[in-house]
Amino acid sequence: MQPHFDSLGVRVVALSRDPVDKAARHFAEDRLDPITLLSDAELTVIRRFGLEHQKALTVTSPMFRLFGLPLGIPRGFESMAIPTTILVDERGVIQWIDQASDYRLRSDQARVDAALAEAFGGAPTSS
Image (tube, rainbow, N blue to C red; front, top):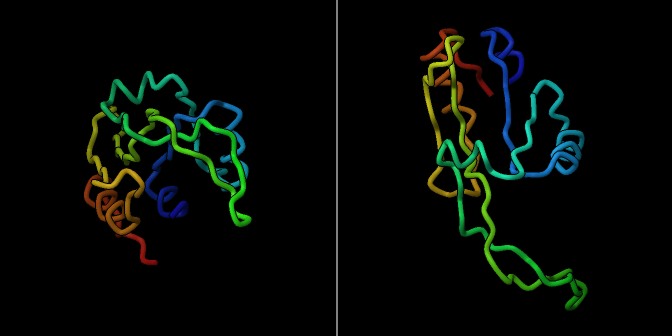
């Protein structure tokens, strides 16, 4: 998708709830080179945009193995960011927002392509 973004002058910025060191590790592991990745460990911006999911299970007990499988016991809830795609134009005006009803899912490439084509011109990419 990056060549299509470049042809439209689109810059990709991602906001993560992960602390800086963990976000940097994901950035390197996932090879997110053309993306600007920002950390919002305190959820300040995420809460301002209303993108907080408050019922994500968290494992607070140490990991142990059962039949060779690593396990932990979910002991509580933590907040996380709801995956959301927001297209903002050069004037700072939001042109499109996409948010799956299932917080585990990310925006579909075809939907993003169609929104880019409508908001910024240019034919959607095919893949």
